[in-house]
Image 1 (cartoon, rainbow, N blue to C red):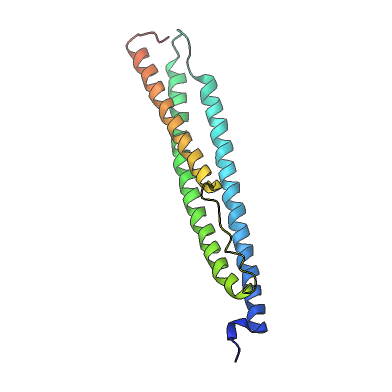
Image 2 (cartoon, rainbow, N blue to C red):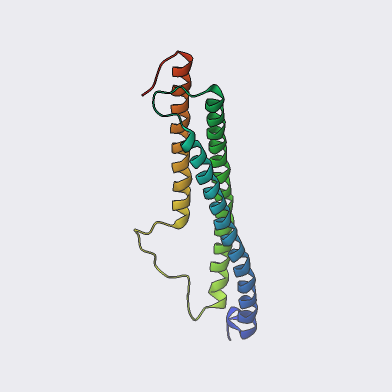
Length: 162
């Protein structure tokens, strides 16, 4: 007797399911990176605006300029929170489809186990890099807000920062 999971009909059905799951996986992977790229561009543009308008030298910045920069910095921190949430949600879906693909591959590709490839232990996934980049922006925005608080304090007390 032959195993039902290895019959040609079962393998054909499994291949069709695998193809359907693979299309969902591809969509989620593309959406994950598109959202991450949009967030990165938004942060770069906002940080470029804030950086070019940061007060430097011995001139006192206006209160309107300080308020604008503080608002932009707070918006950057909120954008980091949104970016982190999007990365988490996308990771859940990518992992979901990956697990389904692995289960379906056992039947569909029983003669060639494609999910048994060993990954180098020193490998850093691109998803970890994207989370790290998001965390880097959180640190940068936090330092920027601290700097602007110091500038506002100095202006309030009539001090001049060098």
